Structure formats: structure tokens, C-alpha cells
Length: 168
Image (cartoon, rainbow, N blue to C red; front, side, top):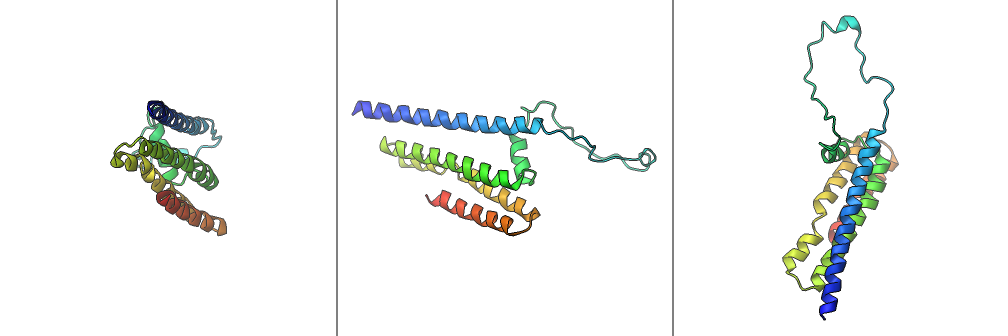
């Protein structure tokens, strides 16, 4: 019986480490992808004579170190609809979101098998729900900018995915 408990704890540690590694790789891939986006044209060009007439704007300084606000940039880009809809829906919501939910559910089942307190099991099982809600709202906000049947289907898909991820 002791060996089964030990194997259960070992499996839980492996799942948690794998989940953290997957999240880190996913986070770094988004950060590195953002660094490789080149813009050849200025976003705004001001004629030389217009500079004297325009009042100075309050522009916040962007951080020079991408590690300083990497996680804030990740969430902000999705919330503001700056990430392409296909990537947001298929990669972030369906692939990564489902993987996080599966890891969380398996970890909760292992904790339940180890006869740990039910409150801990439920906390582990429902831990990804805030992230799921965020992803669903991010898809909704991004589809507001798009038109057509594809955007409507992705909104419906995100809603159904949220319901399934919370219920299952």
C-alpha cells in the first residue's frame, strides 16, 4: 500500500512539473514571437510644421526588458484583441486551455485517490477556471472586431468550451 501512495505522489509531482514546463514554454514562445515582429513603417508620421501645433501627449514608456512585463503583455494582448483570432481560439483556448484543464483534473483525481481533503481536491480541479473565463472573454472581445460566420462560430465554440471545462 505504501508503494501505491508513493507512486501516486510521484505521478502528481511529474504532472505538476510537466504542467509548469508546458506553461513556461508556451509563455516564452509568445514572448519570442513578439520580439521577431518587424514593423517597417512608422505607425504615425507627423509633418514638420505640425509639431509646433500639437500639444505633447502623455505616452507611457514601454519596458526595454521583455521579462519585466512579459506576463502582463501576454494577457493584455489577448484582452485587447491584438492576437489573431485563429491563434487565440485554436492554440490558446482549445489546445493549451484544454491541456491545462486535463492536467488539473488528473492532479485532482490523484489527490482524491490519496484521500487528501476534499477542499484541496476541488481547489486543484477548479484552479484553471479563472483562466478559462479570461480566454472565453478574450475570444468574445476579439470576435467583436471580426464579422462573418467564422467569428460567430468561434464565439459559440468558446462558450461551449467554457461550459464543458467547468462542468467536466
